[in-house]
Amino acid sequence: MKLFICLCLLLLFPAVSWGYIDPGSGSAIMSAIIGFFVAIGLVIKTFWYKIKSFFTGKKAEPESDSEE
Image 1 (cartoon, rainbow, N blue to C red):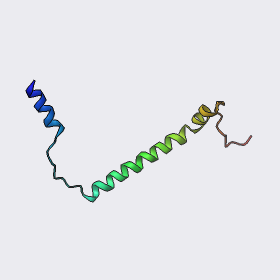
Image 2 (cartoon, rainbow, N blue to C red):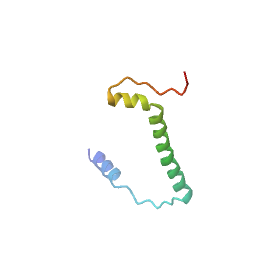
Image 3 (cartoon, rainbow, N blue to C red):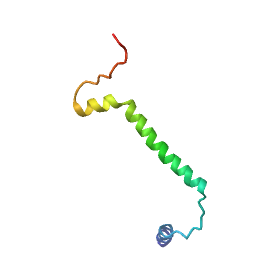
Image 4 (cartoon, rainbow, N blue to C red):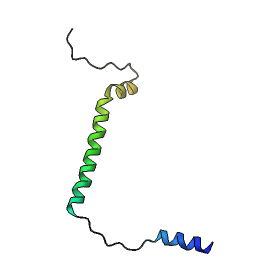
């Protein structure tokens, strides 16, 4: 039991880590964040009429570009 408690305490207080994040890592993180928001925007755009009909309670009828 004492060993378990000691291991838990060691996991709660990690040692100091001296790491370096270069500018390339920062731009990769920014690209991932921007990509995430673009993907969310595309999902919303793709399902816009279904989302709109869910909140309004009306049947989803996408606008048609064809002329009749």
